[in-house]
Length: 527
Image: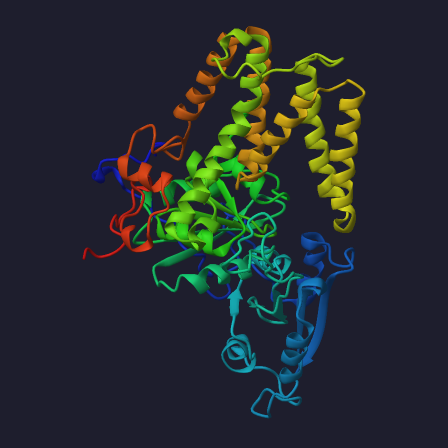
């Protein structure tokens, strides 16, 4: 399949999905060599012995094999104690001990079709799934389910009584808004899906679950609206996730991003992360695809452009005029954070380039360190303060920042190591970086600023011009799943440019972005 979305319609031919596993006929002992399937033994003791090798039973203290007797038949519950809701499982066990005298009581043996009867009549649980594959049973138990096995039966019942340690859906610290919802994604996949479902009650919303990697078997969910999202885009993302062959993704979404996007050493983020369910829901309605990874509170939005990373939910919580003003202030801050230091450095090296009336720009005296080293040390200092604030307990983080910023900066100036202008412009550039909604884009812009500073120090005017041109060329030529990264400027798109520059009124925004090639371009019926 091609990398790009601009297909002729006749080429959008999606490969068929793999069919779901169907248990083989009763009594069959064959194994499917292709998938490595293993049948469950009818002997409960053999199953217990196999679990020692398959999942470390008797070696891992949290793997429990609770044996019971119902009638004259032995049964067992296989589960992990850390992932099991004890109250629900105890209730199930209690109810099973109350079986009547219709052949299922204490005096009688269970009938041959007993497992089916348990499934249909005696297990009071919403989600119960029969399974004949031992490897799939082990995977389900490691994912938090409980397996019910019975002597004389080659089928297990998977009981969804799992419970995960989780925190409440608090407001994300990096995407706060004055007005609007205060809930945010957490590390539990099911809760994150529910937060999106709560906002989009569309029967066309699809949430496909997949398992990634050989060891961690991380659950990955791909969400999209079926009659809006481009099927080619959906298929490309699905294929890349399913084809990812890795040992594990313990760091969740970031490692998955590098596996399915593969940007290499490019510093610019090619997917957008959000911890806000309303932001994820808005992008789904525009034809994007969201990827949720279990154990991660962030959701990936695919595809994204450079300008998707500079938008914030606060703009849409204010009036269009105020929202547009906030957006332009943010654009200005990002532009200043990129170019104010390289330009000031260039004018310092070449003061004749300054127009009349701006001759005051430039240092009156030089510090003991060269200007380039002052810039580099200042950049490293800001990074050190940022990392120290992250790793410092919250009650003392503010005090630590004040000490580092005020005392160290003031002492550095008074001792002559730095000059005032370097501290001033570095502070302005840092403000612009912190005003960038995307944390990843802010770090990438910092790398760009360092590159431009070094280019100016080495080649002055040619270094600034060529460095800026190369960075723009990188942005222009970059694509994410066939989407130009610098859209709507290149390739130029008028409606997209107006939507990017201005926060348009809600009722006047009747079309979806054409860059995602949605199946339904009109967002609202024409008036």
